Image (tube, rainbow, N blue to C red; front, side, top):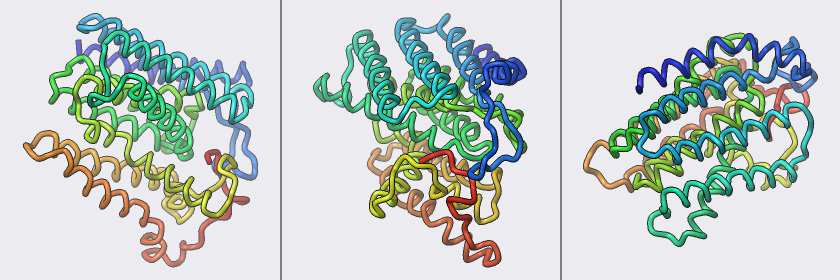
Length: 347
């Protein structure tokens, strides 16, 4: 069943892209280049429809052998809710506050469904606090995933790395159902690579970034509620969280508006330094691979999970310093593009 679910997710994500592209054209879901764009031709931005379809198909197949079909159902329903919200956002500007409010409602509803089914709490915390923390984690990662989806391949690569890591972590914990669901997310992300790298014939759009972001965050939440150590579980979300968090804090310190398009994410600065789309995407994915490798080594060994923290500090700090290092290595390319001259669809 694992192989069938994974292959189905991969093939659906890959083979349904032409249909998603046609839907984009008919519905007007096309990204028209402007002075902030990193692409030069109109590009469909609902490629995430096929990716989400792959995740849902693979998840449905995995549910046939799942020990808790209700949990899988709550997981899939929450993903659908976020994907639909993203699709609506691709069609029209929802505004930051209404969009955030809708995300909070969807995340809280999903967590409440899961808790009512599984009767769990996070590390013995009160139910109310568990719901709040899980909701915040989901909303934060959905937005981080959306903010980080700014160069070709970055989100597809991240879905593969994070999905594979979570699959291994869940398997070690004896949570085979969750391991399959995580592999499904990785496979769906891999299916999109063909259409997005090196030239983007389709973008994920909000529908895709919301769908994948919610999938990974929900798997982390369900895993923690099922007994997986929270430090080890959140490793899967770490690099995107560090990049987004550091960027928002930097803008906040400068008293800049947080939700205005810019070019200050680490991956954007690397792209502006000459690494290009694929180079910056692979750099981010490599950092995530190293972080996930460290987390898995700790999980597999008999070491305490607290040893994840030094790895987070070292790897996170190194990632944040990369633009400076690259600028020194490539003095001829050290001048960053200004926000007004380059793409930046994320805060």
